[in-house]
Image (tube, rainbow, N blue to C red):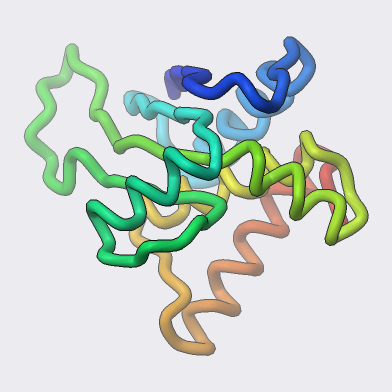
Amino acid sequence: MEVYIENTQNKIPVNRNLVTKLTETMNKAAEIHGLSNQEMSIIFVDNIQIQKINRDYRDKDQVTDVISFALNDDDTAFAWEKDNLGDIYISLERAKEQSIDYGHSFDREVCYLAVHGLLHLLGYDHINKDDKEKMREKEEEIMAEVGLMR
């Protein structure tokens, strides 16, 4: 899977270690789900940007940590093209806050949010209790595979 990472914020520094760990995590998630000819984008934003996205697209005028947008919900990609799964927006400010609140590393929090976003792109959800449990199990499986347990 091809992962494109774009940093559009300037409040939280993004270092090479984070990008490397994030890419490794997303590739492991892709492997677990049998994805090979796909691509996706991860866009780092700040709290103001993600609140605007949340307000404009979800009618929720509040800061959140991660928002996913699926771009291709069908199988129309040609064999030579990569299937674009979608975009994942992560607020690095919120990720930093949550890493402190939860007592783990910033890198772990960003990777977890990216995995959470990817699972949404793949159709997972957490509206009801059973779906939430299935999604959480898959998140923790992926995080354990890359050594980022809680």
